[in-house]
Length: 476
Image 1 (spheres, one colour):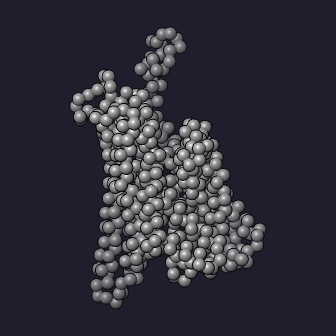
Image 2 (tube, helix red, strand yellow):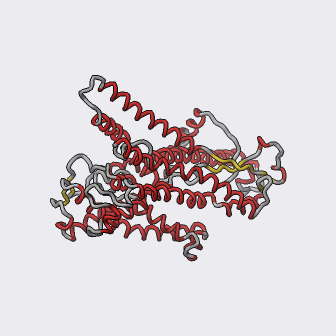
Image 3 (cartoon, rainbow, N blue to C red):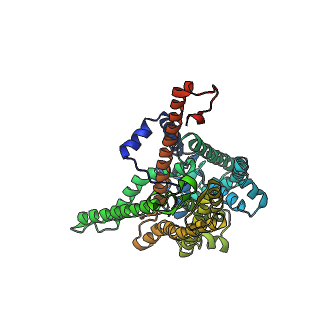
């Protein structure tokens, strides 16, 4: 991560740079086209499946979590009903195993682009069994939890033939790999992280329906015969929206907060004025939205396993008995929320260390003649950056976890379904992914503008440079 200095541009200048840049506009057009295609696919129900209404009820915590990772494709039981959830789970496992746990995989992670490609192949191969397991779990869960849903005219998974189940699983597996493909194209040819963007679009598409559902839920809990019913309903709804906005602002503030580590440059770059010092910015939420997505993916694994188990103590322990009694590993219980909280905090530490990589930063500083004032280069620099990163994570990690578990706590207190309560995983993803998307657009605009400027200078002054085969770098 390079050192950063303070630069300010007006909004008009930034917008002008973006929308007058052909490369950025092309990338935005590709992203928009692929996102629309994904959303259309998410609304097309798999042939043979009949839903009781317009969509599957996602108020159940497990179904809601699966739908979030599927980018909104589960509510319509579309080809993207499983979505990128299995791929995210595979990424978690591969990253954990490549963190010095398995030496060959650790060497791949440090082998540059070729090593990363090999790890990506392993990740996609590992996605297949997870996708099959989760697809079967989704079918079993929907048929057992809602008898009005029919699949090929049947309401019991045991009544389905092997060929029918295989057909459904093939469609869902194809949908997962198409989702991964779309995400890759967005990452490489469009703007932003493709996988995160697909999840973001699904969440954003449910905002207005969620507000409408929250309004109806609040109205249903009030006495319609009261003389002040309308006033009370307006006040309660307004309070709900106000708290939502307050939490949104707090999340935006925390996500944009940074810890600045001053950087000095030896030689001519050395300065004694603190105001002129460049700095290394470490975000309070250094790992971004990844810890929340990873923790959500991990929490779906026990529920998925439970769908393969017969009724008994093990299934009851994981998911309850299906009659309103929750298991110990669901997000409706204290134990499940504590696990979810711990996973988010742990992934915040783990992934932020991967993102920042203090060891590599210390090596780059030493090679580039940079140092932190008062800190020796080498191991001391690495230890200092690690220390700062750990301190930042002890604030950012628990904050993410609190916001993620807040809806479930509010749901227990107010009776409002957790999917409609304030805060939550969806809100964190909306804020973090949107800010990352905006930064990606600005970065693409700056990089493209720099390359265009270099090309213009080269074309203008190439005749004045000798010898004839002078490089573009000589122009600078």
